[in-house]
Length: 210
Image 1 (tube, rainbow, N blue to C red):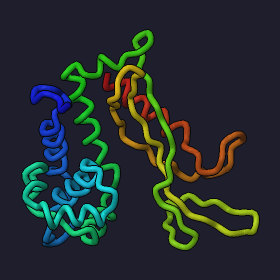
Image 2: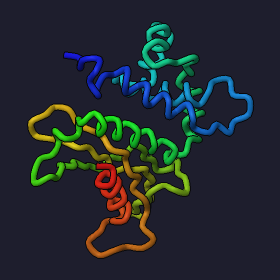
Image 3: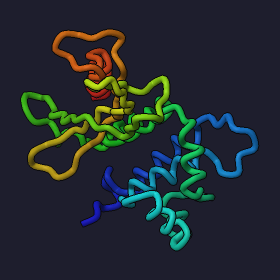
Protein backbone atom coordinates (compact mmCIF):
# COMPACT_ATOMS: atom_id res chain seq x y z
CA UNK A 1 0.00 0.00 0.00
CA UNK A 2 1.35 3.42 -0.96
CA UNK A 3 1.59 6.07 1.78
CA UNK A 4 -1.04 8.83 1.58
CA UNK A 5 -0.01 12.09 -0.17
CA UNK A 6 0.29 13.93 3.15
CA UNK A 7 2.64 11.28 4.59
CA UNK A 8 6.32 12.23 5.07
CA UNK A 9 7.07 9.08 3.05
CA UNK A 10 5.07 10.14 -0.01
CA UNK A 11 7.34 9.49 -3.00
CA UNK A 12 6.70 12.79 -4.75
CA UNK A 13 7.67 14.75 -1.62
CA UNK A 14 10.88 12.79 -1.09
CA UNK A 15 11.87 13.06 -4.76
CA UNK A 16 11.21 16.81 -4.73
CA UNK A 17 13.55 17.27 -1.74
CA UNK A 18 16.34 15.40 -3.50
CA UNK A 19 15.71 17.20 -6.79
CA UNK A 20 15.89 20.61 -5.10
CA UNK A 21 19.20 19.71 -3.47
CA UNK A 22 20.73 18.40 -6.71
CA UNK A 23 19.64 21.55 -8.48
CA UNK A 24 22.06 23.64 -6.40
CA UNK A 25 25.16 21.45 -6.63
CA UNK A 26 28.08 23.13 -8.46
CA UNK A 27 28.80 21.92 -11.98
CA UNK A 28 32.33 22.81 -13.08
CA UNK A 29 32.09 21.30 -16.56
CA UNK A 30 32.27 23.52 -19.63
CA UNK A 31 29.11 23.64 -21.79
CA UNK A 32 27.69 20.26 -20.66
CA UNK A 33 25.07 18.62 -22.86
CA UNK A 34 23.32 17.09 -19.82
CA UNK A 35 23.11 18.90 -16.51
CA UNK A 36 24.66 17.49 -13.35
CA UNK A 37 21.18 17.64 -11.81
CA UNK A 38 19.75 15.32 -14.46
CA UNK A 39 22.70 12.93 -14.23
CA UNK A 40 22.36 12.66 -10.44
CA UNK A 41 18.58 12.26 -10.64
CA UNK A 42 19.02 9.55 -13.26
CA UNK A 43 21.39 7.69 -10.94
CA UNK A 44 18.88 8.08 -8.12
CA UNK A 45 16.08 6.84 -10.39
CA UNK A 46 18.09 3.72 -11.22
CA UNK A 47 18.11 2.70 -7.55
CA UNK A 48 14.65 4.05 -6.75
CA UNK A 49 13.16 1.83 -9.47
CA UNK A 50 15.37 -1.09 -8.34
CA UNK A 51 16.78 -1.64 -11.81
CA UNK A 52 18.90 -4.80 -11.68
CA UNK A 53 21.62 -3.24 -13.85
CA UNK A 54 22.58 -0.18 -15.87
CA UNK A 55 21.59 -2.11 -18.96
CA UNK A 56 18.08 -2.64 -17.58
CA UNK A 57 17.82 1.05 -16.72
CA UNK A 58 19.01 1.90 -20.22
CA UNK A 59 16.09 -0.12 -21.59
CA UNK A 60 13.74 1.76 -19.24
CA UNK A 61 15.23 5.04 -20.41
CA UNK A 62 14.59 4.32 -24.08
CA UNK A 63 11.18 2.69 -23.69
CA UNK A 64 9.63 4.74 -20.88
CA UNK A 65 11.21 8.19 -21.14
CA UNK A 66 8.03 10.15 -20.50
CA UNK A 67 7.25 8.42 -17.19
CA UNK A 68 10.81 8.86 -15.97
CA UNK A 69 10.72 12.54 -16.81
CA UNK A 70 7.34 13.02 -15.15
CA UNK A 71 8.16 11.11 -11.95
CA UNK A 72 11.63 12.50 -11.32
CA UNK A 73 11.38 15.88 -13.02
CA UNK A 74 14.11 14.98 -15.50
CA UNK A 75 14.74 17.17 -18.52
CA UNK A 76 17.31 14.88 -20.14
CA UNK A 77 18.26 11.31 -19.31
CA UNK A 78 21.87 10.28 -20.05
CA UNK A 79 22.77 6.91 -21.49
CA UNK A 80 24.60 4.56 -19.14
CA UNK A 81 28.07 5.46 -20.47
CA UNK A 82 27.43 9.19 -20.23
CA UNK A 83 26.00 8.78 -16.71
CA UNK A 84 29.15 6.97 -15.57
CA UNK A 85 31.36 9.65 -17.08
CA UNK A 86 29.51 12.47 -15.30
CA UNK A 87 29.05 10.82 -11.92
CA UNK A 88 32.60 9.47 -11.65
CA UNK A 89 33.86 13.03 -11.14
CA UNK A 90 31.33 14.01 -8.47
CA UNK A 91 32.75 14.43 -4.97
CA UNK A 92 30.60 12.16 -2.74
CA UNK A 93 30.73 14.78 0.01
CA UNK A 94 28.48 16.98 -2.11
CA UNK A 95 25.69 14.42 -1.71
CA UNK A 96 25.70 14.45 2.10
CA UNK A 97 23.31 17.43 2.38
CA UNK A 98 20.66 15.44 0.48
CA UNK A 99 20.62 12.86 3.28
CA UNK A 100 20.41 15.65 5.85
CA UNK A 101 17.50 17.26 3.98
CA UNK A 102 15.55 14.00 3.96
CA UNK A 103 16.31 13.33 7.62
CA UNK A 104 15.11 16.78 8.66
CA UNK A 105 11.97 16.35 6.56
CA UNK A 106 11.13 13.14 8.42
CA UNK A 107 11.99 14.82 11.70
CA UNK A 108 9.61 17.73 11.05
CA UNK A 109 6.89 15.27 10.13
CA UNK A 110 7.35 13.52 13.51
CA UNK A 111 8.04 10.31 11.61
CA UNK A 112 11.29 9.55 13.46
CA UNK A 113 9.57 9.46 16.84
CA UNK A 114 8.20 6.02 16.06
CA UNK A 115 11.76 4.67 15.79
CA UNK A 116 12.59 5.39 19.43
CA UNK A 117 13.12 1.93 20.88
CA UNK A 118 14.73 1.88 24.33
CA UNK A 119 14.96 4.70 26.87
CA UNK A 120 14.84 7.41 24.24
CA UNK A 121 17.41 5.77 21.97
CA UNK A 122 17.22 4.48 18.40
CA UNK A 123 18.55 1.29 16.85
CA UNK A 124 21.19 1.92 14.20
CA UNK A 125 22.00 -1.09 12.03
CA UNK A 126 25.27 -0.99 10.13
CA UNK A 127 27.17 -3.21 7.74
CA UNK A 128 30.19 -2.89 5.48
CA UNK A 129 30.11 -3.64 1.78
CA UNK A 130 32.61 -3.71 -1.09
CA UNK A 131 31.43 -1.87 -4.19
CA UNK A 132 34.64 -2.12 -6.24
CA UNK A 133 37.41 -4.68 -6.38
CA UNK A 134 40.27 -5.31 -8.81
CA UNK A 135 43.76 -6.80 -8.97
CA UNK A 136 44.87 -4.27 -11.59
CA UNK A 137 42.75 -1.12 -11.63
CA UNK A 138 43.25 1.19 -8.68
CA UNK A 139 43.40 4.80 -7.54
CA UNK A 140 45.17 6.63 -4.68
CA UNK A 141 42.12 6.16 -2.44
CA UNK A 142 41.83 2.41 -2.91
CA UNK A 143 42.13 0.06 0.03
CA UNK A 144 44.98 -2.40 -0.45
CA UNK A 145 45.10 -6.01 0.67
CA UNK A 146 48.24 -8.08 0.30
CA UNK A 147 48.00 -11.83 -0.08
CA UNK A 148 50.52 -14.38 1.17
CA UNK A 149 51.94 -14.83 -2.32
CA UNK A 150 52.77 -11.12 -2.53
CA UNK A 151 49.85 -10.09 -4.73
CA UNK A 152 47.88 -6.91 -4.08
CA UNK A 153 44.13 -6.43 -4.51
CA UNK A 154 42.45 -3.02 -4.55
CA UNK A 155 38.96 -2.16 -3.42
CA UNK A 156 36.52 0.52 -2.33
CA UNK A 157 34.30 -0.22 0.64
CA UNK A 158 31.73 1.68 2.62
CA UNK A 159 29.86 1.43 5.89
CA UNK A 160 26.10 1.60 5.37
CA UNK A 161 23.78 2.59 8.21
CA UNK A 162 20.04 2.84 8.78
CA UNK A 163 17.63 3.54 11.61
CA UNK A 164 15.57 0.41 12.22
CA UNK A 165 12.83 -0.81 14.51
CA UNK A 166 11.79 -4.45 15.03
CA UNK A 167 8.10 -3.58 14.60
CA UNK A 168 8.42 -1.77 11.25
CA UNK A 169 9.41 -2.84 7.77
CA UNK A 170 10.58 0.66 6.87
CA UNK A 171 14.13 1.83 7.58
CA UNK A 172 15.70 5.29 7.42
CA UNK A 173 19.09 5.21 5.63
CA UNK A 174 21.87 7.48 6.77
CA UNK A 175 24.68 8.78 4.61
CA UNK A 176 27.19 5.96 4.02
CA UNK A 177 30.74 6.40 5.27
CA UNK A 178 33.76 5.43 3.15
CA UNK A 179 36.11 2.92 4.74
CA UNK A 180 39.59 4.35 4.30
CA UNK A 181 43.11 3.00 4.47
CA UNK A 182 44.78 3.34 7.86
CA UNK A 183 48.03 5.24 8.14
CA UNK A 184 49.43 2.33 10.18
CA UNK A 185 48.20 -0.98 11.59
CA UNK A 186 46.41 -1.01 14.92
CA UNK A 187 46.13 -3.92 17.29
CA UNK A 188 42.76 -5.62 16.97
CA UNK A 189 41.80 -3.66 13.85
CA UNK A 190 42.05 -5.11 10.37
CA UNK A 191 43.66 -3.06 7.63
CA UNK A 192 41.00 -1.02 5.89
CA UNK A 193 38.63 -0.99 8.85
CA UNK A 194 36.70 2.25 9.44
CA UNK A 195 38.39 4.77 11.66
CA UNK A 196 36.61 5.29 14.99
CA UNK A 197 36.55 9.03 14.30
CA UNK A 198 34.61 8.54 11.08
CA UNK A 199 32.06 6.35 12.84
CA UNK A 200 31.77 8.83 15.69
CA UNK A 201 31.13 11.64 13.18
CA UNK A 202 28.25 9.73 11.59
CA UNK A 203 26.68 8.85 14.92
CA UNK A 204 27.16 12.44 16.06
CA UNK A 205 25.31 13.75 13.02
CA UNK A 206 22.34 11.60 13.92
CA UNK A 207 22.32 12.65 17.58
CA UNK A 208 22.69 16.32 16.73
CA UNK A 209 19.89 16.21 14.18
CA UNK A 210 17.43 14.77 16.66
